[in-house]
Amino acid sequence: MGKRIIQQARGKGSSTYRVNKTVFRYRLKYPKNVEGEGKVIRFIDSGAHTCPVAKVLWGNEVFYIPAFKNMIEGQKIFFGNVEAKEGNILKLKYAPVKTKVYLVESRPGDGGKYIRSGGTFATVSRVSENEVALLMPSKKEKRFNPDVRAIVGVIAGAGRKEKPILKAGKMFHIKKTKSKLWPRTSALKVNSIDHPFGSGRGKNPKSKIAKRNAPPGAKVGLIRPRRTGKRK
Image 1 (spheres, rainbow, N blue to C red):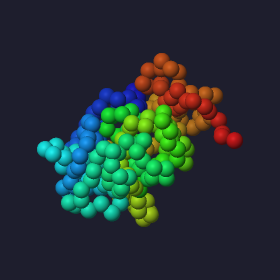
Image 2 (image 1 turned 135 degrees about the vertical axis):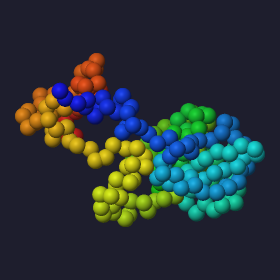
Image 3 (image 1 turned 135 degrees about the horizontal axis):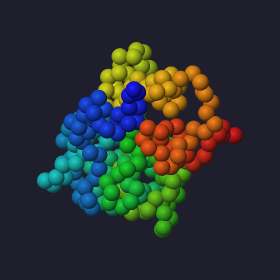
Image 4 (image 1 turned 120 degrees about the vertical axis):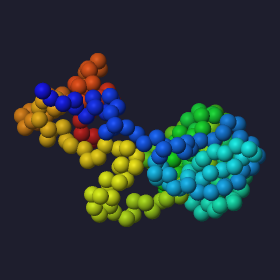
């Protein structure tokens, strides 16, 4: 009798595939409708994030944001209709063209959904009454509501990819911290009883696109793909 395939086992949620909640206790987001000034209390080394996390005191409230390059403890940052200076939190409509920003909201007030990884930033490319266009880290342009908030600057931790991972043990601990599945066995390498793509036979199935209503044991391969085939 075969085992549950990995998708089924992870969906069931056993102790093997359980997220360490203590690692993800720092939520990076702004408070609602922030105006005034805050103070950086300290930096936190969070295993769930690729950048240092800054703990900011605003009045009697505390919130967490990705630290920007050259941020220091005790530094004051300002919110609202303020100067586009490193660390300040402002609406995109107040940011001049070519300003570098990060932790950009998807909709006004959602707390910040885009540009959260270490060393990344977006650049303001166009500003109009109805929308603001940002050049994203992917080099594609994305348009936003002018009232969404962002932080001016570049996220710290840009050099994290410069040193190569020389041994499997280091990757093991990186993945374990974030509860990622690693090492991952290729579906073609397992037995046919353990995966629909398993065994040496049929290495080129006619279709890797899963049926929309397939059960978890059969919903493998390309799930609701927008397109397939080699990009020309």
